[in-house]
Image (tube, rainbow, N blue to C red; front, side, top):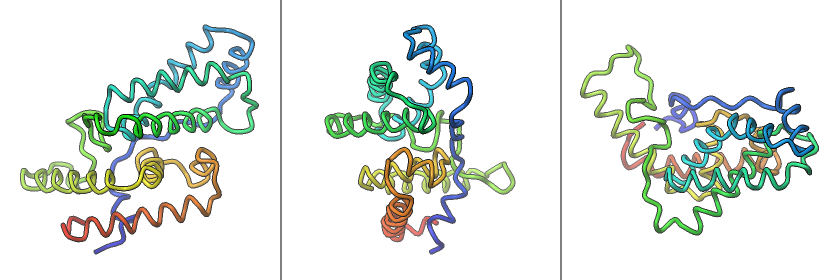
Length: 209
């Protein structure tokens, strides 16, 4: 079986949100001065990104919406402490992941998974086809691969799962992930390597890749 990290590169992923920008800085400074309209603009700018990240972590749109609300409540409460030592998105995603983990631990028994890790709509495909027009047999094979891979990712520990999603679904760099998780670069790489091995082991019996 080929190396998992190589196979995973064929998956279509969500685009990474841009890092700190001058507009972010301007809005944050206004928020720190008590400008509620500026905070509403920040919310509109990043709520969808937070929702998509939470949705892939917990698998439920209902829980993801709760994570978004809790995340921005925390941002509103603590934004005066933000000192621009990292990108705003780094701080925001860190909060969102913590809230996702909290909700997952509290509600994992009642979570009814409503969406694939890889897609925003049922019509999107997480795998690329060489000719762009898959046959029914290829489409059926794709669906099988997707389901097995997704189940394998869901079987990971939450710690490993979030690194896999940040790296391969949100296309964040090792450095960005290390900043978000507040850990060393080597820790990110070692956790990702362990996740690769766990996934390879889970997928071996299916000979999917």
